[in-house]
Image (cartoon, rainbow, N blue to C red; front, side):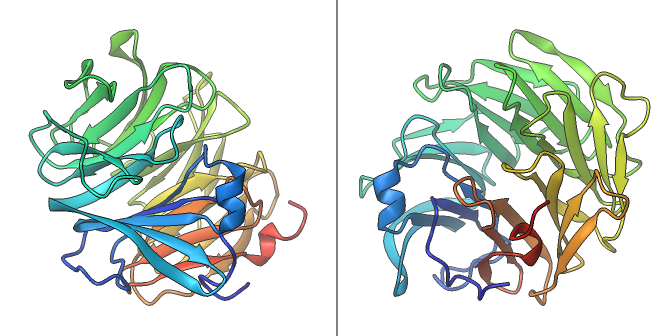
Length: 332
């Protein structure tokens, strides 16, 4: 495993913070996400990293000498999540504890460009549709609703109701236009279609709060959930009576789970047990590697879309680590 934050960037990393700290070197309780549309020349020149803290969105430029502050934006409440535009590498949407979403342009010094305020409690998750023909954003809130947005419109297009507890995760299908999933403290994974305000599928996925979900990049019917019960479970939407796989090993709640963009059966998870674990659910012994380089809750995680080996994670120990785990440098 290489040293944290020492490799050259392969795209934009997005990190969100929830802690009351304004220090650039202190990304407390972060989440990473990589831009999917960054043009190659900017990637080659070093890439840009961003993270959102409590009231501040920071854009960091990584080069051979390290990280430098490229731009910062202030907001009046904590920022809980952030997502990249699929059409414009400068555009971001964040969501915050005051129930609002904010639209930012990193090419401009002032912002936000627009604020969308409809949720009545914290907005904990936001995701931009991967179907570039439609510019849609989905947000999940502690008010138990999911809202659909077109960033060019000043109000939500639709509100989805049905969850019976806070919503922790919302994510678009990379395969099916207009389809997204949500995970909630009500112990269910739900599948929705923007053409209908009613839920399509309800999966009673765990007997505990579900904090994260992700869609397999190679199978439109396969999703994974991570929960407070320390387990990861795979779900085939064609038969939801029981999981198609269960991965055990974490000893505290799983905060984030991500499928690999390069390997159909590989995924990564981070947990409040301070670890990041890499898995291949197709193998008899699915645990590929356990990374223990944090001293507090590990709560943010993403895998690069440009490099098949690069990973970013972060934790309450106020560190972000960008590295290449051994298991991703070898054939899956």
